[in-house]
Length: 372
Image 1: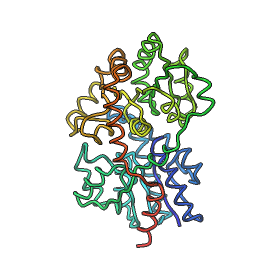
Image 2: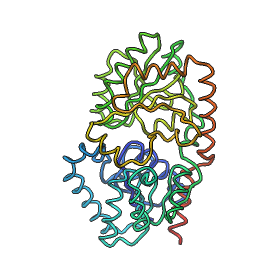
Image 3: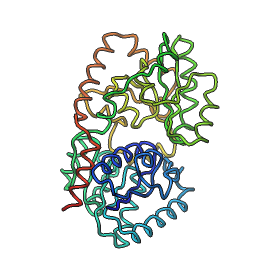
Image 4: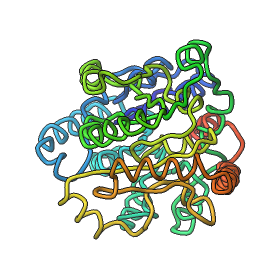
C-alpha cells in the first residue's frame, strides 16, 4: 500500500506520527511518504519534503513566501500524479492542504483524499466547506462539535475522540524535573513552536516572567523539542537568565501550578492535564483587523467552546499585557473559590474530548475507506 502524507507544522507532525505508527501496525508493508517532520519519520514515514518549508503564520507574513510555497505545491502534485498513491492524507495546515487537494483533483488524481484535522470552517471562512465536500472523501476532525458541524453541512466525517486524550493519559513528572524544580512554584511559559509566534510573544512573556519572579514564582520557558536548531538557539538566547525546560512541554505543564502561552494546541493539552492557562495572542495590527472581519467566533481557545462558561482568559494584542497576565494567574491561584469553580469546568471540558484511542480509530477509518 502506498500513502502520500502532507503536514506542515510541529503539531500536525505529532498527529501524523501517531497515525503513521498505528497505520503501519495494521499495514506493515505500507510506504508512507511526503511532506513531514521528525515525528513522522520516527514513526516510519519517509520524508521527501521537510515541513520546515511551511512554518508560516499570518496573512502578511506569508506573502513574501508565496512563490516558494507554490513551487513546493507544484513539485508535490507532480510526484503524487507520477506515483499515484492509494490515498493522500492531508493533515492540518489548511491553507496549503486545501490548495493541494484542489490541485491534485485538477491534475487528475482520482484516489482517496482524506483530511486529518480539517479546517476550522465552523469558526471562519465557512465557504471552505464546499472544498471539503468537493475534493475530500473523508474528514477526521479533532472535536465532536466540529464533526457535527461537518455532518450538518453534508461532509463525510467520522469522530470518536481527540488523540491527546490517550496521549496525555499517563503524563507524569520525571525525577529529573522534580529534582530541578523541587520546592519551587513553577509557572509554565509556552512561547510556541513557530518563529512567527516566538517573535511576536517573547517580549511579552519575558516581562511576565520578570513580574512572576519578583512575586516569588518560578517562571520556566518551554523550548520545544521539535524546534529547529536555529530557532531553539534563538529562544535560548532570548530567555537567558530564566529557567528553561527542553523536555516535553506536557511534562512542564504537568509539573506547574498554571500556564501562560500562545493560543493553540497547548491550550487543549493544558486542559487535559487539568492546568489553568492564560491564553495570549499577538499579531500585526493589519493582520488583526483583517481577521476581525473574517472570523465568526468570539473566542480563540478551544477549551472555551467545551463548557457553558469560558475556562481560560484570552488576552489578544494590546490586552496581552504582562501585568494583566499575572493578575489573571493570581486570580486563579490565590482565590480558592474561583479555583474550585474553574477546576470543575476543566473536568467538564475533558469529558467532551472522548475516551478512546483516536490514532487507532483514524488508522482503522483510513483502512476501511480504502477497502470500499
